[in-house]
Image (cartoon, rainbow, N blue to C red):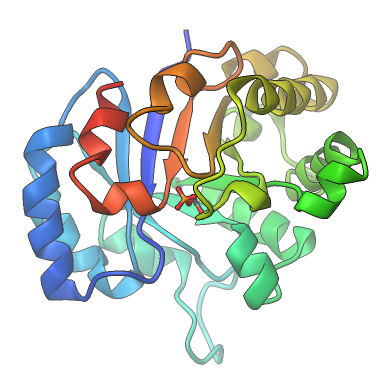
Length: 246
Ligand code: PGA
């Protein structure tokens, strides 16, 4: 049995002070050991949010990392920096980073490896545009993203990686993929994982993301190949409780 994982992706929201307030408000509502619950927060909020989460079952997550250890990379944050402040999960390759910050499958692959080297867990995102869906090339596109992102990983490393399937047309739009659409792609992801890593694919967790809310979470998260959700907008509100306790 794969343990469910529900991660909030705060994106570029909440100053450190606001982040502490939100964490205090949410932590009592979503502190459970039935699923893995993660707050992925802006880098500047990691330390104060981590303080508030101490003594709970909720894990701390980052939204990005750089793949070098240290050096002349102005503005970047290294894996050891995240590790030292208690980060357990790191979102990699979110479509917003691919779209606005030139993230590619190649940089995603480098980051995934670095995160694993530092004993943290990558949440590697993939997803198609509306144009790709309408052209009928969703599965091909996702297979390429998964293969390139996980290139040269051993099965034992791959087992730790979490894949987040996020159709770009469903992110922040209020337009959720139907549970069948989401399951179809998550199943295709497990198939390609099986081709690469064999039986390990059955142990790997695949999340769905894109307009998940308190109303649609239960239906999505009980599909055979969906092991939880990556939640943007609704993770900043009390509604997150309904998603975690779906
Ligand atoms: P959303 O964002 O839940 O606001 O659609 C999901 C995500 O981008 O991770």
